[in-house]
Length: 457
Image (cartoon, rainbow, N blue to C red; front, side):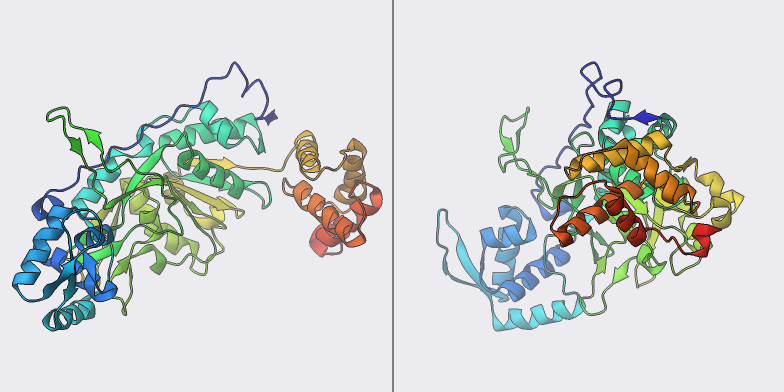
């Protein structure tokens, strides 16, 4: 058994965790051609921004679309010539800028654009640019060392075998299949791997607000999932060739490497593009939002669709590292599948999948029940968390009165749950929590299924 907080593993003599280098921002595009988008698409975005926001200046429009002044000014000049837009007057503040609004003709055109797609926001990047960026900054190119893994798992009590298996699995970049009885930390391990990639050691990743495919917009950035980081200053880096400051492309967001979590709610349609028939644009599926990070499928086998159907959907992405998505127009296109997939289940693998699929799950790691020593250590930690005096005799009492008597297997989650039961009971009676037998009995009666056939079989 190994306590991964041991000084033998993490101490003054241990190597310091390495950090993945930060991604390099693309330079700011100087023209629509450099953006890779059609002029018509950019024009539609500008007109719809006016329709949604009303009066805008070159600066506020550029901030809305994440585009440089030169491109914004170019589109505004064309719109004014075509009588879709007009100048209301000078803008407040520093610099020579103006306030613009749509004309009546422009409002008609804006409504036509909104009927086609109601996307209003940052300009997208091209599919090719997205593919290139994902490959360039893949976390799977960099080694994850033992100190990095131990730092991520420091709050868990795991055997050295499990730690070693996880280390090799993460560095392989291939899917990780965590199985074993419920309550022993599979989900906690998966989330810790996400923290490792998304923490300081895992570095950051650049994700676009949206991508464009066949003039259709697919939203990638999701504020509910992606955690933005402080971008470089607008002055950017100094060009060695010219000595001038280079601005970065603001269509990209610097984020922590994402962790996307799905459970029993996962269905097959969720793994494809989600087209909103009202707003008429797409949201990317979870595996695309997880690009550069970790995609966790928890409680596998508990979904409403048969496990085999989900497994069949994953065969190509897991093996080829690419996925295929389809627009509502019928156009199919390829996206990178650059994410560490972690599948957690308490169902025996042989009952979930056939040999062909299990072969593709190259890292099958069993997470078993804790040993007596590990159970006591987990109990001791949670006592410390809630300022309860730890007593070894309490562990022996639980073993004799409940685990042995009712033939209940000790799980890693039991110490936490029993201690939290004791704390809740103590609050009700307005007395200090302790490990007295009365508290232990009340906690076990609330928590353990003592009278169920399964517990007494």
